Image (cartoon, rainbow, N blue to C red; front, top):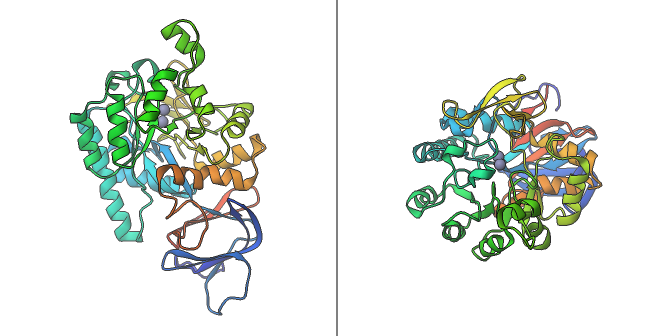
Length: 406
Ligand SMILES: [Zn+2]
Ligand SMILES: [Zn+2]
């Protein structure tokens, strides 16, 4: 940024390599007007007086889209207050996430309504203050999990879906991603209801068999959460249903082209060969990077609560990842910028592919790709400036500079 200019109003960014889904554009120029992108391409003569940010020879990329995220900077979305929701959204904005889907954990009905309500308050408040909201919608994740695959979520609150409970969540109009374990009674009705509401319908924390996945697919399920974590495998299905051995969630996702999935690329959940396997098997247009980040983001190592501050489950952060009491993983503690750097260094995916997995692919899966997810004229001006090592220098949201690294 030119010295002496501290305003948040800018017209564009110059002097960087633009990262598009189709490739890189060195010597790029990105312009916006009234919060929307108006030009994305090679540098050209611009009218004098335009206020342009300087990318200093780094990268100019799209804001990230996170489908699966629990909190940050000390707050969990399940704390269910507008202050907590705003705190976590702001923390992830600093890590490049400009469209976020606050994600529920397993909990009681009242608390789930409070969380959805708090997200609604923050969406309206952000629109009033900034003209746009970072919240794309709520991810109704818990409580419809299989108890034997609850992971770090409180098992007490795992239950099967019933319309009398879930219809009011959908009636809020805020739920855009809806998860349920496919083997639970009532799962097919839940999937159909979620599809009617145009949600991304997903299966997660599940020990589902091939047959159950096929039924779920027919009812509209198209996505599976954090691949390899809290999901069925051939051995787990053999344990449940005996022989002949049967296909599991893993084979279903890998074999069915229309299915997408996500990886937690924090370097602690999955080794480089698994990240490489996932991207080669599904391709960058069916694989999303998610943070699955909890409240320990940008906080010192120590003990924290996953989910609601009063009623959630305890875990500890060692500064790299969350660990549950028994030593198991308890979700990630880093932002999407970290996931992008890790994926880029751990796999053969090139930068356009890695950015696609953090922006356009999740935007497409959640149905918001016409508004956000890539640098394209007409879309919201959500723009990241990164240095050559992919560290975030500046975050532009809806054409306004919202964060600058010190
Ligand atoms: Zn999970
Ligand atoms: Zn999670």
